[in-house]
Each structure stands twice: as C-alpha cells, then as structure tokens.
Image: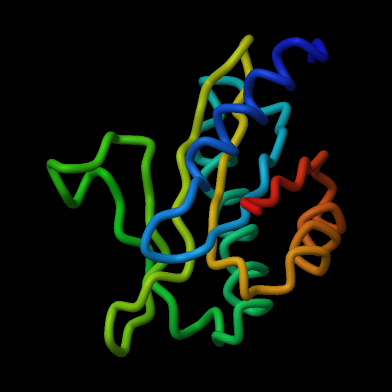
Amino acid sequence: MSDTVDDDLVKRTKALLEPGDIDLNGVIVHTDYSGQEDLEMMQATLDAGDIIAEHAGHDPKDVYVHSGNDDPDFSSNQHQGLTIDGEEFVWECQQLLRQGSFDVVIYYEAAADHEAIVAGIEDLGYDVTGVRGD
C-alpha cells in the first residue's frame, strides 16, 4: 500500500475522531482480504472488536454487533459493537474495500487502552495503524 493512500486514510480516520460527545481513538486494520473474502474480513472485524471490548473494560461476550443490514441509517459495511445490557457504545467500524483489499477503520472511546488494542490486533497477524483523536 502506498504512503499516499495510507496518509489519506489516516487523515480521513482522524476526521472521524474529531471532538463530539465523547473522545475517540481509532485503528486502521489493514488486511489482504479481497472483495471476495467478505466472511474473513467480517471475522477480522469481530476479532478486533473483541480486543477493543476487552481493553475498554467489557467482556467481549457481553457485546453484540449492530450491522448496516439491521438499520437503514447505516451502510452495509458499517457496524457497531454495543453492550447487551444497556446498548452502550463500545466500538464502531467501517469496512473499506480499497485497492483490491479490505481496510477496517474502527473507532472507540479514548479511555480504552489504545496501545494494548493496537498490540492485541497486531498479535492477530494484521498490520495496524493507530490513530489518536487528541
């Protein structure tokens, strides 16, 4: 992936983190999954979401995924991790097919352990770019 493309994606991700109701950080999970490997890409999203949930103080078993397929306000490749009890925000992502492979942009509350999240997703075997909202 070229540096120009990466720089553009990092800038776009940073824009998603701009101050709102809550402070956010994010990660870009770079995969080699093609547009034909959407099941593998979705599993990568779920695995990354579990790591985020864990480092945000939630049991991953207590988080469910609300998907674009479930809600006309979302695109088909946009998902949220919400707590089962209370439907609290844990993470949100957008799955982007770029230059033939998927990148998954995930953002979450800045109070979560950002370094541990990046390291945990890297341990899954993915190239990860951490993006801080501050």
